[in-house]
Length: 196
Image (cartoon, rainbow, N blue to C red; front, side, top):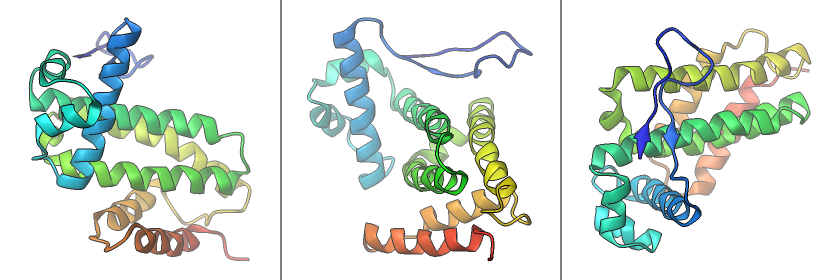
């Protein structure tokens, strides 16, 4: 895995990106490892066993280390992959009705934030990478909020930063069940909706 960088001062591409292998079989293994790591970090925290992640992915530990030489490389790849998925999701949802697009994206964001919580300390010290991720999240989510506000579906007095605090609050709670998290998120989303 390599983390790519664009030329200083350019904004065409994110400064850090997840670069997948070119060969199809290697790319499948890479993606399986990312999926397994995301699940493991979400369920077990940042200390999840690398051997267990390899087993979940259906590959041997040598394949994991070939793609991710250190645990830090794996943390960073999972973080960036989640941010990139959020950005793609915003684009995919933009054709929906304004509120539906915003709600769908925020539900995905809560799922992302839950995984990020497990690896936050591991990536937070990489300030440039963290800033890149934050910028990508703002660029993806802010237009969805503005569109919902323009259509009268979201409150005008809500900022995108307010939404980030709300999502972090919901995703940071230790819910007993996913259904409970979904109920609390639904209540929080009701607070963003424009009052009729």
